[in-house]
Image (cartoon, rainbow, N blue to C red):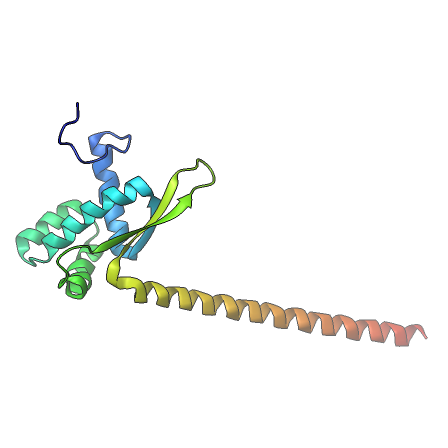
Length: 163
């Protein structure tokens, strides 16, 4: 019986589960928002919040403990230099899990897990992506108009030559 055990096994061995949570934590801290299954998001939430709470101490021991979990030095620097100062005043609740619905392939319930105070970063990226997409669409539209004008010109010339 699993009395008093509150963590999910996620259908993995303990080493595989630890590697999965390390990877999810690294990705979340790097990208500020990730899309995964609901059960993985819920497990990653408690894992990441514990890391951020440790990082709030901002001493060498905490840095080494976090480095043992997150293997990307740039992400650790970003955690201590950017993330903790921004959300360090909070007493907890550094992440948010938003349910998305079911995945088409296997009907697994999907979710987005994100850092709470980083909506502006994500919205800025989305706005930048939208601007690039609009510029690309505008360039395509202009090239199509130019091509259709050239085609019309060729048709007119062929009509004049045929007479």
